[in-house]
Amino acid sequence: MIIDLIEARVEELGLLLQSRFEKNMHRHKGLDWAKIKVKLVANKQKLWSLYEMEKTGGESDVVAPDVRRGDYI
Image 1 (cartoon, rainbow, N blue to C red):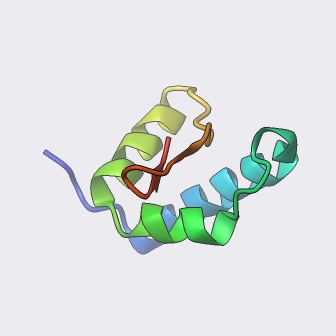
Image 2 (cartoon, rainbow, N blue to C red):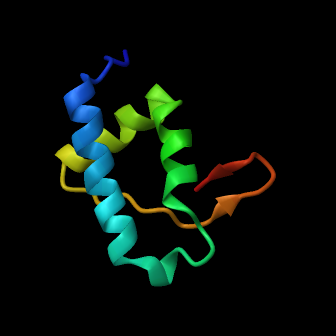
Image 3 (cartoon, rainbow, N blue to C red):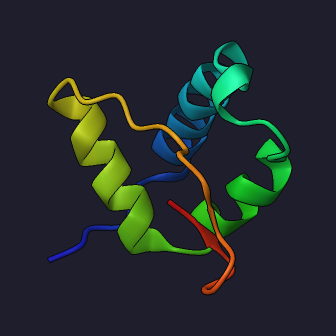
């Protein structure tokens, strides 16, 4: 069951992911964090998965755009 993250946690997670994204721009050429963030905020399942990954020490990252689905991998 997916539990809604409280707004403070969503903001905290967003800042962490943005910081990691910006530190590793060499892996994200041509990608725009603002567009990625819009997709994440709109999908609670993805946010929950990323939150859980971070809790267990995983470091999620954007790998590439999924042009077919209009999303990011």
